[in-house]
Image (cartoon, rainbow, N blue to C red; front, side, top):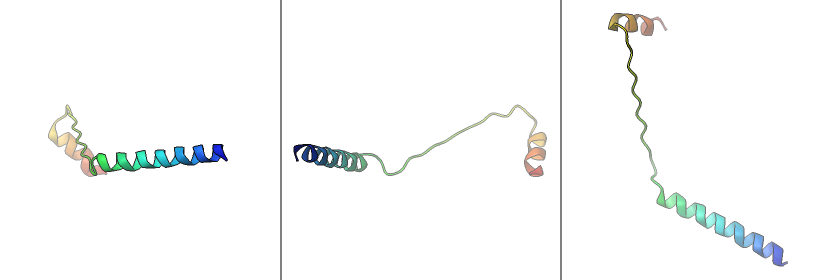
Length: 51
């Protein structure tokens, strides 16, 4: 019985830790990426409009 009690308390502590982390962390994130293409604009536009 002592083992089951320790397992239950450990799982409850883990759940409480996850809930606390969920409250502290931000609800949204933002990712921004850039790329530099070494080509003439006409070449890039021709490849982009072909798809």
